[in-house]
Image 1 (cartoon, rainbow over the protein chains, first blue to last red):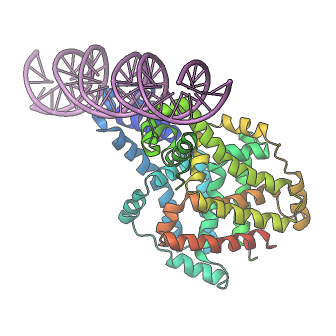
Image 2 (image 1 turned 180 degrees about the vertical axis):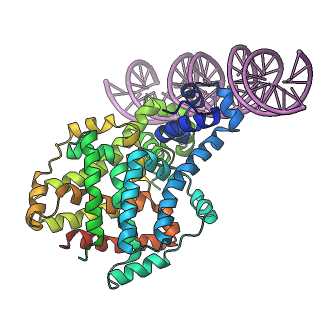
Image 3 (image 1 turned 135 degrees about the vertical axis):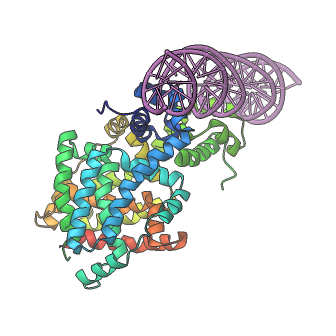
Length: 195
Length: 195
DNA sequence: AAGAGAATTAACCATTTGGTTAATAAAGAT
DNA sequence: ATCTTTATTAACCAAATGGTTAATTCTCTT
């Protein structure tokens, strides 16, 4: 794709793809070097160890997730705009970055201590505003935690279960992509309708 | 847990736990042998290779998922009973088998060819009955594929995102478990209400 | 042009890892 | 009791893998 990358960035780009697909344990430094068109020693020159290279890849991936959520929780937009934006942005972003969801989720489950560290640094997650908006919008009938979980689940699940859902629904790549676009509106309706 | 297991079953039990946590590439045959209290050669005596041992673990795990879905789609129960049962059974089963969701999902994404093979054998998935019931119940306003995806997503996501959700909602293990029980009813309402 | 510092490589190395082998012990059959 | 089959082990082995080193090339400054 991008030919004008310095060695370090090229390594990161290639490593991202390989770590996404094979995970920390499954990835091979040699494979990353080969695909990046470099000597293996270069990887250790720019990133001391495999773990450090993995770390950088992971933290970049995680930021994509977290930033979207922080944005959602801390903005002062109207609830329905917030939710609508979150859904659009998340689905678009995941279409662009196939594999990123399972990658992040997998690593967070293998290594749960990471969660504390990652959340400690960045501006603390605060559900307060969101909770208030939910309460107002639905006259206290909707629980904010449940609502939040539904929203994220309905957006992300179609990506992590993609191989299975494609099979069950008998859709090819193109049809699945189109279906994901339809799904944006479906999720918005489902979440924001007052059942 | 179970002391009265023959060597083969003991290996399977231990391997399941380790593969769930570390995946195929991350697991070590030596570690499995140690934890099972056996010589490493025993693993190769009962299961020719690491891959074969992994296969057996995976297929057992996958069956838990698929059987639940087949049951849902092929039974002749009323829609609301079907859905209600699926939600209860799935959440209970996942509480009992922590880690199984990410394990299955991870492997299906790493190795998508598996999906075809796995679905080919077992009684073919047939959405027809389900689609008809959905259409009747919701007067054609609800798309069966979307409904199905929502249902599975809302049940499974809380397990794969457990470390993150625990942190965001500030819940410990016990509180999270209790919350999952509450969630059963929430999901039923959300799915079966006519919004 | 020369020298310094960064980038890049080929050749190595130690360790880990899946897998094998040959010998031994245990269990079942006759 | 003896033979046969099954279960189990210790000791090995070859390949793979992350990482290192010392030398070489490139680049930029003066």
